[in-house]
Image (cartoon, rainbow, N blue to C red; front, side, top):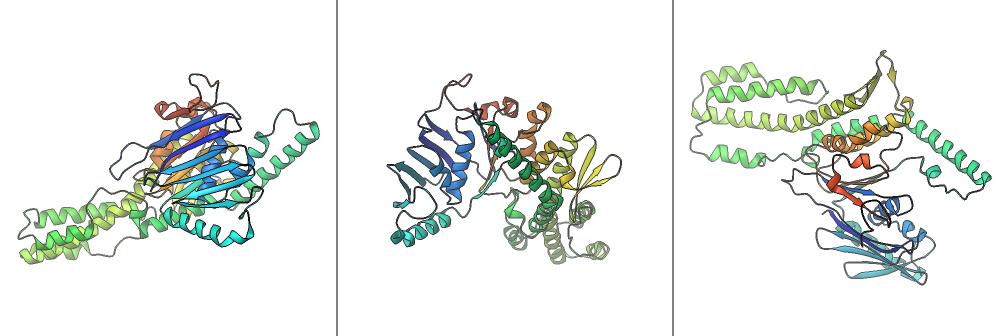
Length: 414
């Protein structure tokens, strides 16, 4: 299940938008990317927050702004509809409609609490295959302040901004991103299908074919030995990332191959297939980790970021080991986004990024989207971006959706 379209009428009593989201299949090679671009105040962040609110069954983003009707469609043909009229917030899904309180979370009437709870359960069950992640920035509290605030309000906004930054640094000092990478490495080894698209037939089917084939012409001592050597070379690289490899004896298997009949060859060959399949699954992890390290090296010129069994190690050129909170604002933002792409799941993942370019140099902005796609290799999540920077869309200009009346080069989508 994937997002297919978000439509909204009367946003801020001004805008009507219909935004299609490209979907992916198991064989898709093109990334699913949408880049919302437009002036301040046209609804880019609000749209992402509304989608997040639907996926998390939190309708406060809809309570906060004027609108008439909003609909999130899925590629299954199902859709969730939110409407607001005369102080009543209505939500409909799969033919069931409930009324929510217009000012705070919960039902409009206490007597319908059970119906609202059932509605939530129905939606969560239907969309359980979708993993939605919203990536924003702590500075939004200050960035959203308007020019007509008085000086006291500006001072309060700035103090809140500083508090949020300190909170971010405090969290970063705990190396939370490193822990996220560590969990990914562990979980990806246990269940690689959750994170990677292999394009290979199921292992069980391959083994059954091997065992039931009258005589496989490629099942020779030389071909099996070659498979085993390939596995051993892959394991050398995997050990470098502290991945758990299989325990097997290459010398013993080599001796057995020298005196094997066809039956023994079939058994050893099937075992080699098993080892190769497991090694391939671990190699998916290695390849994505190597890509992540390569991407970070392409951005950072006086620091290095490496993956170990304990997560991330950040080192300056002088050899000093750094905490995440010691990175600059732009460096932390970059690491935060790339880790999200690195740890993405294969199916149903939606990564929504609000102003990902914050604190980044133009050169970084131009290569941000392709680098995120590289970091999510063999996963193909849906990427949703909201940005003020046309440089973010430099490599994927065809994915750009310009919203808001008066935006250069396009009218509002309606």
